Image (tube, rainbow over all chains, first blue to last red):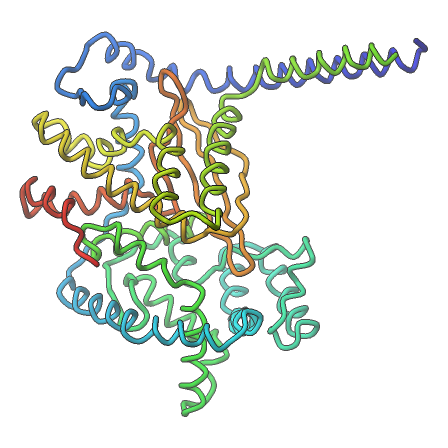
Length: 279
Length: 193
């Protein structure tokens, strides 16, 4: 064994020692968090809680720190006032029927007659067109890098991508796809609350804050400046049907798993927006 | 020299496995089950009923369904219930959850599943996954906790929407106006289809 091999061996050993201490360190780090609850844990473990037992599931007893879990979910629950609930419920049913009777059959038929690459192209085109909205909101949220990436993607896709139908920017790992900022999220970042819940015909669930955001975003959408005409309606419809064709089944899944679809959708919307704001 | 290399390799491997993180073992368990479930889902010559049965068989050991039932009612509504009601609710809720999980899994059949870096906080681990297709990326986060024996799923988030939180909001709403019997009835008879 020459000197070089010995040093290699030593290095390897050192490295594995480092790895193991690294791991050990991590588990030590996580200990204080658990030991915070450990007095409670122990107390709960020693007192068998008869009422809480479900015979079908021995595991329910294993999960002792219920409060520990409850707090997590209570913190995650987004509550919002719903003073317009009768209007909202009406609009919910309207949108529901609109989806099942009109949009879904249209999107299905549209899928039959158009190849996948066409639908993807249309999707890319409309997405590319709304760059100003995402760009401005990235800036408003202080996300300089994301804004730069948005802008570069727009330039690449509009030129090399042929007016945005193609998506060559995706080939470049430096041009990260942004998380899709809008004005409602910007307001949320600034600490503005939801206000109240409102359901719009066609547009679906929203809140006061997000509706104001929608108005602002409207002015950042180039399509809003196209004169209202039959062409405009056709273009908008294409966008809507094309988008729907990518999401068939999602609303159905939500509805089927729900006991009260109106409440489920309201809650899902609020959770979804909360997550987007945090991103 | 060769022998030495082997020795080093073995040392290296044992040193690593000896100290595997909690979150890595959680991730391994989840990945083994999910991959098996997706393999079943992608089988071409098997009818849907048989697929569903097998998938539930595969994933049931990592889902703590009874605990999820309890969590979805929460400390506000669960403790006051009689033993019979708890059992009935748990049974019905599990059926609902299974059906809903199958539907959501089937929505994203022939797409790639990517596991991202898990995040651990105490006895909980969140394992973010991404279902990637040509058209879209859907984020699904599995939330596990360490029970006495193993890692178990207690909640799932799809695009940031937690299953438990969504059910909680509905149960709260139903119980605010109605009784627990109303809730059981709604759970038993799906409103749609």
